[in-house]
Length: 149
Length: 76
Image 1 (cartoon, each protein chain N blue to C red):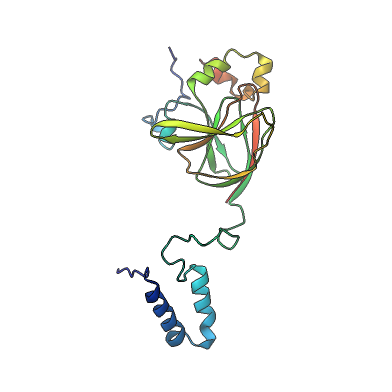
Image 2 (spheres, chains in turn brown, orange; image 1 turned 30 degrees about the horizontal axis):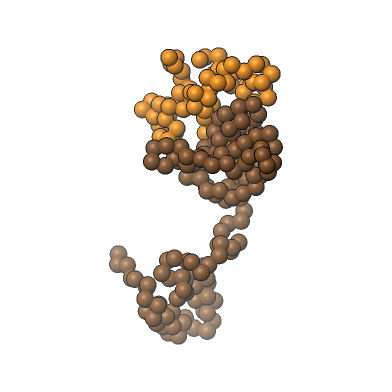
């Protein structure tokens, strides 16, 4: 199988123009539009950086793959499986740390601290291996509610 | 000396072959499940943290959510 490099903008423009003018008739323009939209192909994104695009509802499946809650006992950690999670909940008496396993060591920072009292409501990515949430309170359990996308 | 315990993750152990290697040496409390019954993650604790938990009173154990894991504390 060969691979065509469309990183050259004029080359892509030429291809799309040819496709629109010669391959697809007027009744098939929606196919061209769908192709371009579904694959996010245009001269500003074909380089693969997508740096001009925002992550919108049309870019992701907004229906959660799963939802649920996770109780995290004091001093213990939860390592979610791979996915993007929107989380909420937590208790003001608890402290939650996001830990990243980098260069053989767990390294963390607070995403929920009992002082000041804030509750986690965030979107985080987990790879199922090197990223975990730790309840650093040894006195209190906590419950996190989540939607996984 | 830490006693042998079947809950200590040893990635060489066949029973823990699907557990992330970064959790090697920690204590597996439970494999949590999502609403569809699939594994959604792992709940673990380090040996050091567990030894601290051992000195808690019954009331503190319940408040910290450790009542369900009391048998693990008692095994150390």
